[in-house]
Image 1 (cartoon, rainbow, N blue to C red):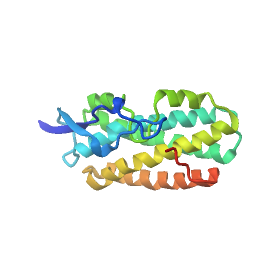
Image 2 (image 1 turned 180 degrees about the vertical axis):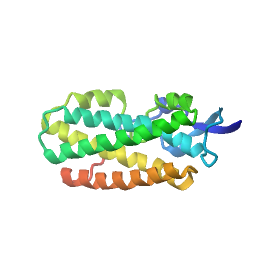
Image 3 (image 1 turned 30 degrees about the vertical axis):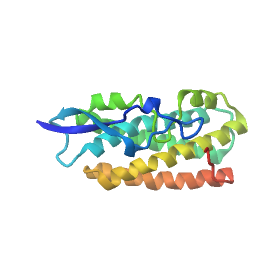
Image 4 (image 1 turned 45 degrees about the vertical axis):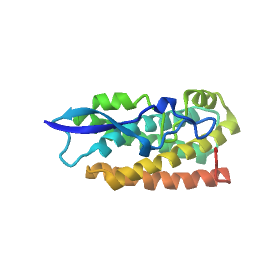
Length: 199
């Protein structure tokens, strides 16, 4: 039976905010906690892979929720709506893949544990509630600002998977995420007319 250490985000829910609105904990600060046993983890997969999958799924879920709010709103900007739809569809597809791997690897416990963390550019519930109540141009701008930050802060964690992961299909997916999200950030900057800086 294979044993490996699973990195777990310590104290993420209590982490200080890098901005007054977003709670973030860099992935490099994650500490190992506990041991997870699995006979179904691929031989080449490592702790970086498991941590990345467990952390990225809730991160994507929030991006999907943010996109759904925009798409259900009165925002008429077709370019922004198209961007939100692409983010929603792309990250839903990626989550389906990662959730399947998490289940196949016997990591349901890890997936559940990380599902409650707020990290790597995710916004806290208060910010999400305030965002959901916006309308029109305020919502349009806030979507682009928050999603830009959401993308930017998670790219470092994704690069860590590309550099240090062991499971090649996940490494390839991570590289694709970086390429897509970097391009989307440039698109957001064009739509805003400036580079957002929530700090």
